Length: 350
Image 1 (cartoon, rainbow, N blue to C red):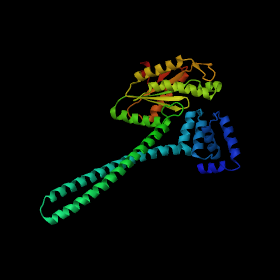
Image 2: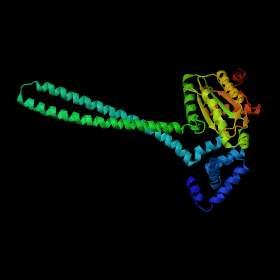
Image 3: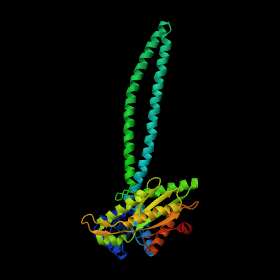
Image 4: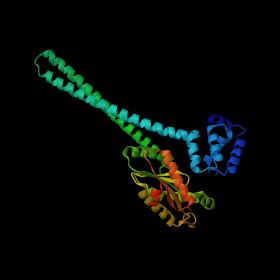
């Protein structure tokens, strides 16, 4: 599908495809971001593709085409997004390989050193004999041993340099991975990092039997705020809300930007009532502050958050846990916003 679309975008019909994509986005009330435009170009250019079929299903179900939906589709179908994930996976594999190579070099160095010591000990033992022939042999062996030692020293220096270079490369790979797993706007974990963290947390909870809670938080009426004040001010609000959530999401918790104006918090080893207390603190802090526009110092008023919380059930996969947290979030929205709801009625009562 991708190659056909790319060829179409380099042909005279590209302008027509662009017009069709914009018209389709406008008809379905999809915000014309760069990512959405790329998705809908693929949609109109290849109507029988898997991406187009999934978009049709979303539209048919009457679901809103949110930023989170767009990011999920892009990660699944757009080649650049796929490549990003593949590069991360390749980086992990290379890092593991570097560890293996470094260890092999260290073993070779230790073996070489032991060999030299054994030869030196043999030379000292043979040198104590009186026989002239043995003395000559010992002298030759000693000279050979010295040469080997010199060569080994040179090799060890080279190996040390190589090991240091590989360590530097591994650090660069890890730094690149950290950056690729971090949301550029808010500095929280991004969607890929969140997905991986939740998979790990669910596996650990299943193995240990400990509690695990997931919260999903959403800024109320954020689209209207963006329409009124513009995207730069909207980004300012996202960074502020992320800073409050991030302070509550220190390890072992994980705070992530789930997509658009939606955030997530993973609470490993914590029961629902404790997680609800944290969410209420976050909600109250965000609502209590009157924000100002940086460029003009105008009062923007306060923003509020709605949150949903779900406590993992035994054997429950991450997808189900997310669905129940999302359902609790929408319960907060239906209940008037600026509130926290729990998927489990008992936890909500507590």
